[in-house]
Amino acid sequence: MTLEPFGARLRRAMDERGPLCVGIDPHASLLLEWGLNDDVAGLERFSRTVVEAMADRIAVLKPQSAFFERFGSRGIAVLEKSVQEARAAGALVVMDAKRGDIGSTMAAYAESFLHKDAPAFSDALTVSPYLGYGSLSPAVALARESGAGLFVLALTSNPEGGEVQHAVRADGRDVGATMLAHLAVENAGEEPLGSFGAVVGATLGDLSSYDLGINGPLLAPGVGAQGATPKDLPRVFGSALRNVVPSVSRGVLRHGPDVSALRDAAERFAEEIRVTLTSA
Image (tube, rainbow, N blue to C red; front, side):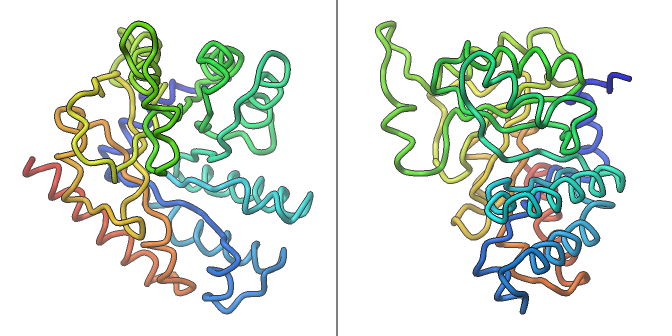
């Protein structure tokens, strides 16, 4: 059975639970900070703890696939189980895999995370459009079919991203703005929110020269350890603020492995974001 579109499910989750995404990023250094070994057992304990602490109360959980893949097939098995348990507890799962390729290869990447019968089926997937936006067509089609969504890298927070995303095309529009324009077309007419979002860094400062009104969600990494705060969000996102999904990873995860401490840290971020949205 096809799910209700991701955008509608995300809008409801953000309204009910607050617009916060918490990453599941089992860095080797973070495992050690938690007193865990940098092995599959430590990975499993870490992931299970984050899901237990967050999945019944946070709108979005975002596992970073690479930190599971580095352990081979056993790590991927932990990822699949974490996704399934998080979704069963009520969280939406955005798989942070940043896949991007062409043709049948892109279709296979999409099937890995967006096919309804895939073991790691996720509510949305991060994708890279830098083989051309059209290369994402298999993922767009499968996401529509399954009721899932995409988050397309548009204006990322890493300094190196600018050399591609700020490159100016012959028509005078830069590449980042072009990706936003494509997403606005994908989301045209969707209510209450389109399912095709952009990744836009919360650390980028004033983005008033960009049209962020894509009628879709804006996944905003960079809050917490990377230096951005919830109070920065209105300045960065302006009139698109209501559709922003701020993403925090180390700012919450460093409070583990205690479940209560993780929950308290997430709630502090969520409350600050609520206050910011209310007062903006």
